[in-house]
Image 1 (spheres, rainbow, N blue to C red):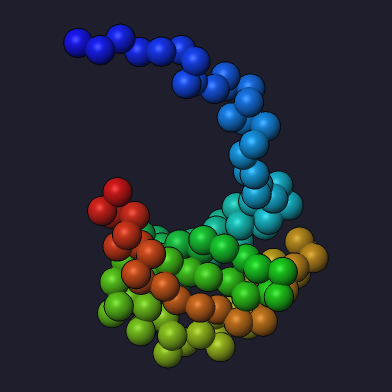
Image 2: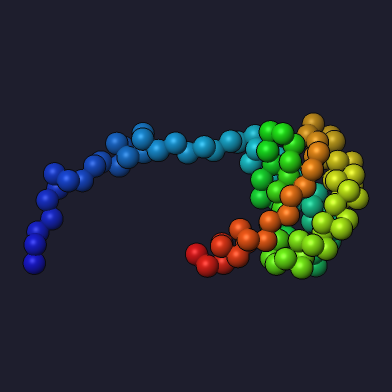
Length: 112
């Protein structure tokens, strides 16, 4: 068996300083707050099959859906959802202009 050479390894500190984490604390707080409002807006049953995943700077909310059927049904009531959500999150100082429904990413997460 071939022995490992330590000369080819980098220290954890070297690796971490090279990583761009792209963690946005404000966006994470917004998503957490939006998620709570989403659950109240759509109810427990629908919130098991959908969840807010991303809130972009251009005020677009991405909702992950468990399947295309759920995404399609939510799409039909999108304007109503936007209005209700905006009413519920206005005290947070954020607004939703549009909602995108994504079921492919949910399926990718299931495969990991």
